[in-house]
Image (cartoon, rainbow, N blue to C red; front, side, top):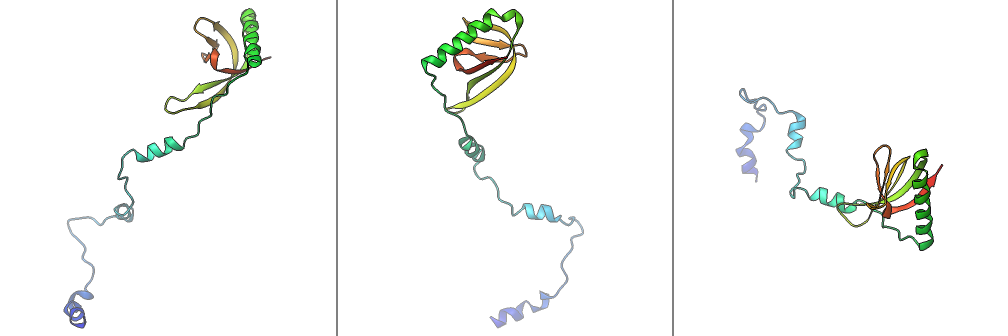
Length: 137
């Protein structure tokens, strides 16, 4: 081992070489060489999507469904007065089971019973079958 140490002793204390053709690499670029890389492209997105929380859809009892239907009939009769309502409804998730409960506040523009939709003035379309609560002011 001592022979090997003596073998390189002539270059051991030479000054560090500085290239005349290649500029010195910045510390940030040098560190980037050793940063982790994403071996499986898109895997991080899949993990985030799996971890994303969704709510389960509530099943309403017959009493609550009747209450919502009465409120919809009342709103349909008062459509010229354009009452302000707060409606909470379930919005299914496009990518996985479950969804989110959304609350919208606005004036009722139109109720479309055949299409099972309620349209608010600002353009929000609320599926009637997904409504869990309607509060009228």
